[in-house]
Image (cartoon, rainbow, N blue to C red; front, top):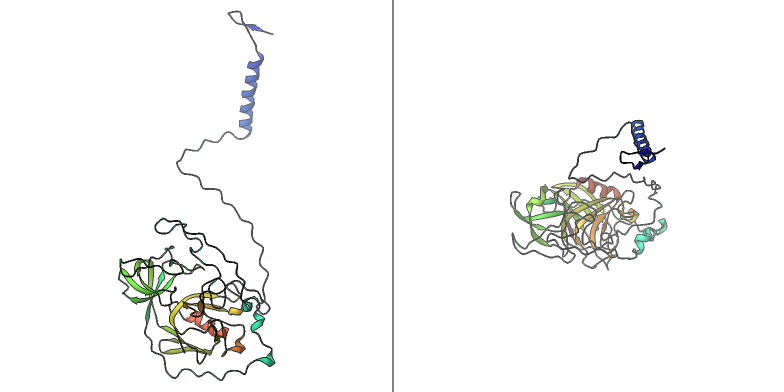
Length: 353
């Protein structure tokens, strides 16, 4: 059927009917869904992305320290085999806005002993005779409290070091000095000159060359005083820990072999790495790895990394008193545990011949 308009033109009714039906359908659907929600107000802020839940990783199988023979690239005398220009998580630019170079991971084979700890284990009949009982040193070595700075937790970046307060910026062979280590522990330095209230202090740094010094702003650090000190005697192959004038522990030690001797230097304790389940090294390194502030004088690098000297535990306590390491000092696990839990960061370590 066609309805005519007053002008006599025919107007189709079917499209009108379809439009009405469509409007009615939309109203019915909106009612059935509970009605339309109000439009949110506009904002200039970008919404946060939705949180994503990462799939949980499968638990690692339990490892028996007595049978573990594999090792990660943390050697007896070095830091990890990663030459770090910028520590992980650091900004991609230096303090002047210049881009930092890309860190490379050298593919360097592990030393034989790190790959197979059984190389340093002898059969019972082949063991050397036990060393004679160790007598405590007859007198306490000369000492005095030292002041130590630890970088603040809220500062993550390069620590500028100068030759004098507001002087010339210093450069070091292995790169910039960062406020935290490769393992994300805080930087530790020893105060040589200055007071807690000073704007600038002169410090000894745990970088090469051994005994490196410079001036830093004190505001980036927390101040503390340490009275503990360790004496390592390479000739006696012994390690002794003191708290002031009080003897805490003493033991025989494994020291560097003739080709890679333990250096006779003075420094301090910069990092403590628990290794009871080999989370920071291998079974070769014992239960604790105590990183010291100085480096081997016989090696320029080791396993692709820096030849830092460490005081650490051992999986061969029956061989203490020998010279067979690459420069590190190894002591029984129960003694290194005592030092790790007793001596604070910054503890003075003197190695004498």
